[in-house]
Length: 246
Image (cartoon, rainbow, N blue to C red; front, side, top):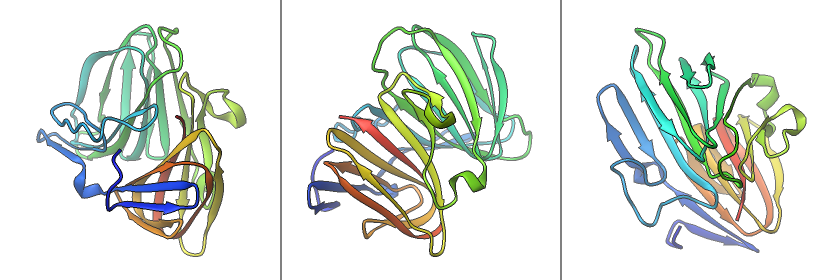
């Protein structure tokens, strides 16, 4: 990511806002998608990913529609459901329906095909689809789901995906720790980004401040360098926080 007017220097950290309105856009009628990084027909050499974070798509899928069977290989993919429900089927024999507050995760490894559909004929479904790059290639494909309660992420960072599966999180082949949080009113969260890591904040809903930087729905924040982070001034905010390999 290039350093531009959206970048703030704070001590040993560089924080760069990726504004929601600058994302790539796709509208297929049944699918409306915003791409934080280059994806599909949207290509921007300045936004090809961040560290080992390769894709953040904010997808709105019409009732009864979805993505038919298609292949993946050597990608760590999770879907964070924000509204409605997401139905998954894959070549490993897995099948599930994940509702808002849930996450489905697939380690594609040596190769897998899957489909994702909105099982409701009337209600739209919204989710963030995230792709991370694995640290090891051609591992055995796996699939998992987790439900995140409101209490688990209210005013705190809830780890739900990690390399070592600690604290009940799902295990990924990517060198990444991924957290969810909601923030409202006087709630505040503090954490440290350690040396040798990168950070990314994706605002799924609402608004908040990160180290005094105002962010709203759809915005991203890229963090280079180490230091302390404070999340506050939340207004119905829901975020994902990525602690990533360089």
